[in-house]
Image 1 (tube, rainbow, N blue to C red):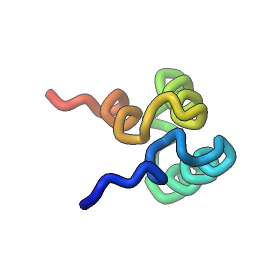
Image 2: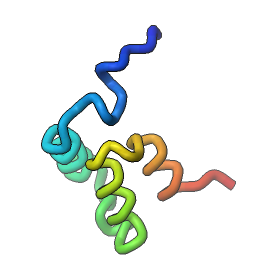
Image 3: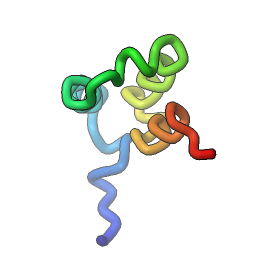
Length: 64
């Protein structure tokens, strides 16, 4: 798969990133309940374009 800068987190406006997170929250059962207070700053940074969803997911569900 070729790299395309249109799909990096900073390429979309915050409103679009927020919409995607809301859609993921609706699709992934328990996302809100699992994230709680620890996850909220991560979601805010994702919406701001500072973190990608993969980085947020890795922080929420670290591999052992």
